[in-house]
Image 1 (cartoon, rainbow, N blue to C red):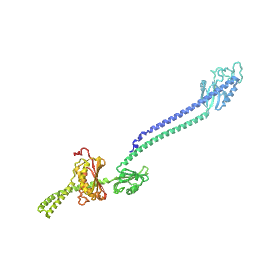
Image 2: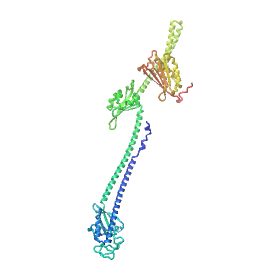
Image 3: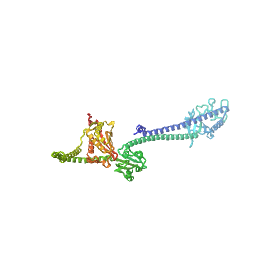
Image 4: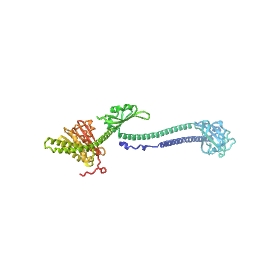
Length: 604
């Protein structure tokens, strides 16, 4: 996993519960509705305030006009009526009415209404207290309403005098002046007989403007709600996107790690049928690189493999554990187990193909090892019985040959024949001893040993043979493998067998190199390489079998004993060879240095 994936903030930190988003949206909606309602009420308040102020101004203006005309020119009722009618013609004024405290119309912008009752008795109590400007909404006819402003009518103020007259509703002039017939007469006691003036204003323009404001308010509120909900929805989608992206990144990282470190080779194609996934195990198994395979069809990269399963996979029939040998980038066929299938999503659409390769090399090696062990075990039992039966007669034959040889004089042919018989019996006894040694499980006593000294000592034993054949010896020991846990005597015996085989393979001289390095975890590797004639591929798998040899005069026991000694140390031995170029033997030994006291300290 890379640094970016390790330092990325977890997606869970961005999580916001859905109920929180819904609750926030509801709160936003409530706030917008409350603000809209308040705005509507505010518009209504402003409208009533403007109309009431306009009505109050009209009342004051009418009172001022009436007061001026009455005081200066002795207006009569006709002049007041005219003033009332002229004032009512102003835009936005529906009517002007002056009534007494019993609701009878004394003056009206419509002359025909004079003398009628303007209000019902239920509102008289309220009107009598209207010392200040009051207002109310009054329905005139269906679909039409008037904004009615009213208060006490005071045309004379403090300068006029109210006197009783013989004709109700006439003007009573100041003392010393005789009233005329058309003059109005107001009561002398205004506290008991009051006049009320009403101004009816047209609310249609204001209501139209108010309706327009309401529409604008509702529209703005809807826009705000939509924008708010859209913002919250966007935030929700962004949150879901971040969460999904985080989960996708985590899943991708997890999948990448799993696919990369699978112990089997994984090859997958995309919808276009070209290779999209090629993990590390597949690279090691096939010897190919992902960069060279990416974007190519499997038939181009793995022709022998793909052609054998292509038809079955395309038919949708899974391939399960099909064992086959395939040639990839190397010359040697690789035994693999192939599983393949077609990837289809939930809708049934084709997504790609997946191929799983499992290396059967280890399995085949283990199978061969088991078969070899079974064969060696049977051979060992046979060898032990045969050696036991042969050794006793050999001792008798050697004794008789020695006895009869002494009967003849030295230098005679009979004496020489007896000596040859004894030598052949000794050679046969050595073969029997080797056979017994091979059949007997090798006992090892591992202890901490300086690997460099061990190898130097073993190479010193073959130095003369190497010089005689013009062979150069090369030793390389890694500092990380200073100590190794082996039985020095038995392990030296195995090394000597390998050295002698390498020297015999280089009849015309060459180089024998011995290299020690750390292997896989807990192991060390000892590599013995020569530049000799090599081993034929058909013989490589048989060289550790007992009594199998390609050398004239060889017994075929040496490498079998080497294999048993390495196994006794818990190790493994492998061989690679190319005819004409040389052979490499690799010994892998577990390093148990300091492991629970299994390896004693080197006393030397």
